[in-house]
Length: 441
Image 1 (cartoon, rainbow, N blue to C red):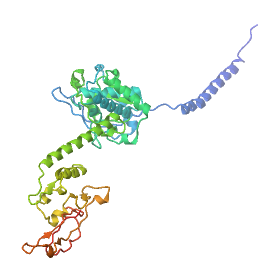
Image 2: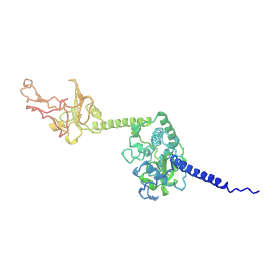
Image 3: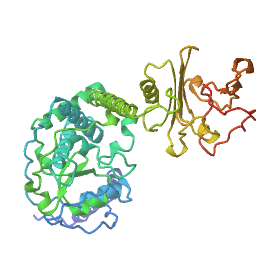
């Protein structure tokens, strides 16, 4: 007997159809939920910017090092632009080992300059510090850069903009100091680099920047490496090849004033430089006093010019040298030769222009050194000149022999605020005759 199945077919079809509809409904709910929970990353095209046209500098011309100037971009736009710049496909050989050949003091200064450069540029990160150290050494060997380690690291430090390593002119050294451990680690990296350690990944790179900025010089260089967020570049053409890095650096490192608080080597160097300047000043004063002669009419009086660039204390040493063992002596100095007096008594203009005075009278127990404090500020007010015109006291008639001509005795004292011509001064007091306007100590 044959069994018919036609009655069961519609039920099975309905079940299948319902299952398909349920699956479609589930996809309609779950699919958007998954998209909302895991949105796709949409990469925006980098902002179109105009960099200078790249130029390959010929071998006969040393390339110029451009000031660091950045394109006005947001951090995201800069990162997108930098990601689109391809790495060079040319060979990227490792640099040759470098060994510092200077003496111990110069090596200490070079090490601290290098340490400062790498820690302020890369932070307390050994890998980044090694990369920056290699760039410093590459620049040291390249004829487009200074010939010393400190010169490379602090190139342009006297400019508010345009320094090659930004920390050297943006005040970073005064705002932040590394910890002693971080400074020690930076010095270890610097020491190794100056003793022959090579960081191979950056090759002969001479430039780098973080990936969130775009400097204008980028278009003239080849991108060769990336270390964390720093991108490294070398010049295109011959100037980026190993043959271009054959210069012999100097072995005498300069003293960097900015490092005085961080580096004993540079702090001591500054102290020694100050001492050398003081010795030079004393030598100059010695030469000056050999040519400083007393007035013909008064062997105890000296009128001279002084160098306003010398330490104010040097004028006192000059006066003591000139006076020697004289019990009575007077030295007056002017920083402006045109205002100097050449004979006594001085006129009012010459007195007002005085920059320095020294008076000695051992019989009276007087020895005074005064400065024009408007020109040479002093911490002790008693060392400042005060403007004063003194009357002379005539010798009593009874003390003059009848056969002699009455004379006027003027005590050679030095006093008064010495103002330069044009300064406001109180009018001089009228003096009787005979009288003289003299400075008083």
